Length: 369
Length: 121
Image 1 (cartoon, rainbow over the protein chains, first blue to last red):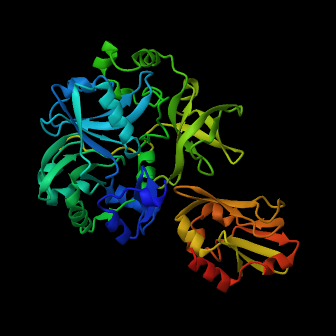
Image 2: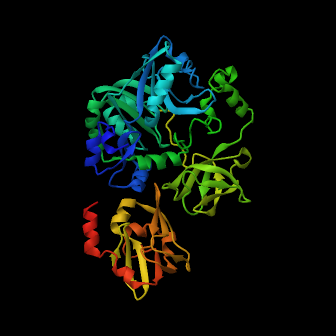
Image 3: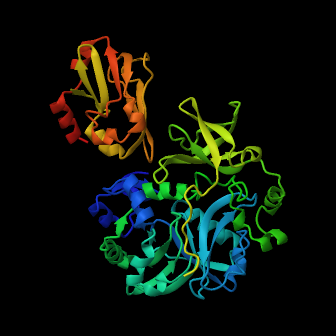
């Protein structure tokens, strides 16, 4: 895709002014880093508060007679049991139990289901939902809205100044409310492993709100580069890398997204495969790896102690908060136990890699306020 | 000092070329977190991979600007890869290479030509 056809978020000019290096991402021109660079931006977010423009992501309302039960036809989550004010992480599944996308879906109010999906997947996601749930739900895409993420241990104290009601949400709670003088949809969630919020606002107000938050010395703009290293340390998968249409939620370690009620009912797409995998019929499993030496990137082979290739790295890189490289990758379940000594092949050389627990860096979610 | 379009620099002392990446390249890469330097004794041809520099985001190849045999690699980068950002055209060197043909050095860009090349990017 040439630069001329890239879409811009309402914050494009602000990114340029902040010294961003812009890259094509999900069809948009997005900031990969600002003047501080990925390393400093990453560490700033872990210690203070980082502000991310994630307006490329797909926002929509699913409306209809019973959008919650309808949404269960394309996901393995308990959405009928989703209470107002709550949000869930879930996955859109194909008929074979493969992941079409991962997403957040919540009830910020009584107006159906508010969903946020990956930018690169959004056109297909909404088509799949529309095809599968035609006649049951109407998808109202919110393309005139921007999405900001405020993440880090100081996010709550910063947001409390501007939107005290929003700041009082607990992890995975969501609300539609007035904040910054506009109709906002706020959830206490994110993609860094830190405490923080995702804030949906009208696009025309995005620049003012962005600047308001950045005026606080605790807040700095953070690019997609650090967003990736933060989520990797938090052990959170990235669609198109750790997840794709062949990967099931069980293989990906996302079993928590297959609710007990739905397991018992076996009434979700790909239930036969996923039920078998839950019973132990699994050929590969995502593990966390602590890597010695050069970073092992996506596509690097994983070998067992004998040197036989047993899997592939799906995401990998240097972990700024840890000071060494880490990776996520698939291995056979027999080699997935924490402490298992493996190898990663980087530029033809076998380097030691040990299976470690994820998240690599502990989550710091605020579950009770 | 001489320069390549791939943003390597070379300084020549007799027939020993010290090779690194330019300040421009280091700035473009961002924070260097790992450097893979070549094995001593390795023979490289101009244009071959000589080293690999890794930032948080990606790995980038560093090419040999000249042909020769690796005499020494900068072992200090193993413990302090950030030297590549802090002093790219000094302490951040990657390797010393014994070159066969000093005339190839003269054919590379000088500082003025490299600066003019940067202006075109």
